[in-house]
Length: 226
Length: 309
Image 1 (cartoon, rainbow over the protein chains, first blue to last red):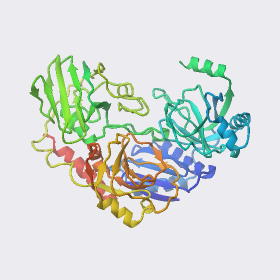
Image 2 (cartoon, one colour):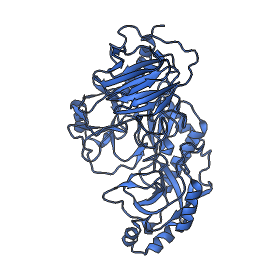
Image 3 (spheres, one colour):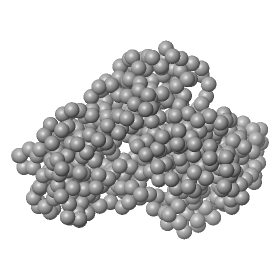
Image 4 (cartoon, each protein chain N blue to C red):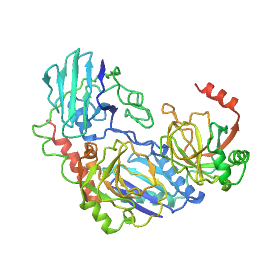
């Protein structure tokens, strides 16, 4: 583990240099433990694949104090379990209209579209971290047979709720944005609601399962949401 | 008490000092691009320094005050007129009921701050009134002001206006090189490349906004084409994409990203980034973390000294 001052107000804790569930678990343990401490001197925590950026108020805390805190927390062992969280179920309609890249993902992996859907909706994923845009969760655990590089030219607009694949990851666009992930379906659920007590449906460390639904169910859930 | 937006100007949003504690949900701090001017405007009218105020970019707004109000404009200079008379900047001034306030173009920076006694009354979302443009929440429906918008003003709790010492803002917190500390991936760059960043002038591109200021100048490409594993981005990080042209990530930035960060603007100079305009020239100078923190402490002492007690 290395700790690097990233700015006068932040410390980057690096636990490795790869996308792996082991490193992710270490990052999330540190993240959850620090978050549970509710230390008012710490302003923001940015977990990523193998690092945690700790943003703090430099008028009341030093990099050395943050580093000591991190070492203490890690020395005490995991105080917050992250691997027994409930599995969040996300319904996804894998219609071609919602998944314009289904055929490309199938072709890239030499399988059928039906097999793409079957594989994607049978795995259990974990939320590595959220980033890119408010509520965008990067999910790890994509089956090997679905890995597909992102589009060479991003789409100017991707609809909110779109489910995509980029390399070894899958994720859901919470709101309409430009984006380069391969789109394979769409969820009717609202993934980001700034007014809600818990603004994002997914949190770092959550486990996720996609349930395939048909178009009629998609529309019913969407209507109920309104 | 209400204020009607007759003309929104170029880009006006409601901002306070920002939204903290939600970066792990992908939510950037937002908040005033020049936090120092926001604080000064608020303190002048007797508000808490975090009260929601109007951030006006390049071209100011035209506002109709339906009732008597006390306001102050700080930050970039812009001509503010009521009828034909000019309002002084950096002073609490009373505007009568029915008055139309016209704010002109900024002349020495990018953003002016209009604080109203009591503060603008917008919903507090995740602990802040700040507008998050990309996330479309906070401020006025998560967007810039539009003609016809009505802004509500909170009732002040018997606030007392304050005054600045004359010439207090002359000894500027706005000039000279922008101070930076080494970035998290500074060693991805050769010493020569790092020296280039510190010795070359950069021009602020037109493609700049509150999320990032794109700079044009000598390229500072990393030593190797290695791909950085996505990590967290601190406010004011200077990241370098493949083309070697640096980008200063700012208040509306993404919370994570995959480009190496060569340097980072110090907290005490962050407000100056918010006053940079397209085609402005920027030069960087490196300071140590200890110097950066001391500069921030000095700035806080300065903030206390400029007001008449």
